[in-house]
Length: 94
Image 1 (cartoon, rainbow, N blue to C red):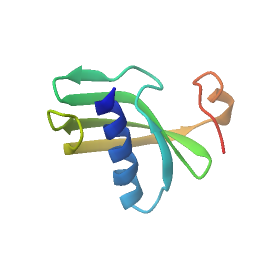
Image 2: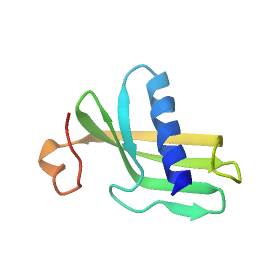
Image 3: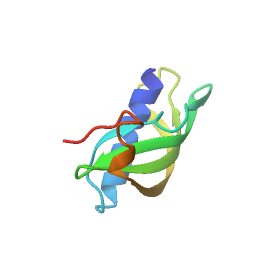
Image 4: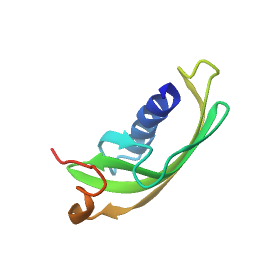
């Protein structure tokens, strides 16, 4: 659980760096559950919210053994998630 939270926070920080998006929320388990291997987590079914829109993305995140810090992170952005799907995916606006 802690690794997922720290990775979600890192995802928002990394995505924000490209200045195209301003993410205020990221969730690693929207389309599928993340896979954990030791201190590494792969989230193929993640989503983030930016400017009241949700977007798909995937990432791989490696944390320190205590899962308090990130040592390696990579991600790939996906498409916008239509608002008509938000309720089914337990996403929300504003």
